[in-house]
Length: 163
Image (spheres, helix red, strand yellow):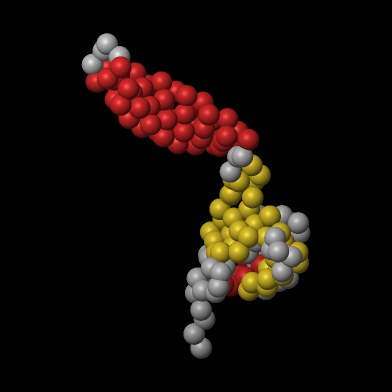
């Protein structure tokens, strides 16, 4: 019984991954990733995983250029989860509503001279109507052009060994 208790921690330490292999077990070739490094031009590279070596990640960018990035120089690795239509609708509704409300309020105030109501009431009606109209248009645009969703993975690097 005692030997099995000592064997478990030993097996766990043997199963620990090497620092250069921090993400090779779940990152498949062909996956779309966004890599951020502390230095380099550009600092952030977007592309598909081409080759995954024990110490290097090779990406193919959209312009078909290949980029080799050492694993130890990666600060942040983000994996694409595809387009997020719901987020696109929410963002489009919010931004379109803001723009529509602003324009509607201005147009309502400017058009108050020809209406029997006061400038405040006319601006308020334009504000609400423009906000709803702009929000609807923005939501439609956001649904047609959804943003890409990314899952971030922070890469922890081991402290350098001093000799």
